[in-house]
Amino acid sequence: MTRTVITLALAALLSSAAGGAGADVIESNGPVTLIDLKESRIRVNEVDYLLPNRVQVGSMPAIYQIREGSVISFLAQSGAPYPTITSIGMLYQPPIQNTTNSATPNEQQ
Image (cartoon, rainbow, N blue to C red; front, side, top):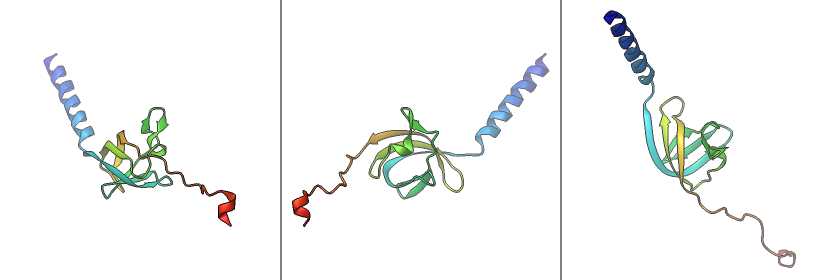
């Protein structure tokens, strides 16, 4: 009985060590300076990260809610070609800029 318990404990220890040995966890925060929706990639503090759609804020993918200038805090796992963000918190959202031309038709002549 004792041999079985020791064997099971050793197997559990080895499997948990093997599962955590592959990827380092990165914790960071800062302003978003680039958003590439096609590649699901963002840049924070001059470092590129993947931000997959499965990472959500509320019920919507985080990558569709952030804007350049947003300040975020996040956890990521190291990987190639870029670390992958696994959780995110929005600390600041800049106001949406009005990009339409507000000139009246008479002023456009």
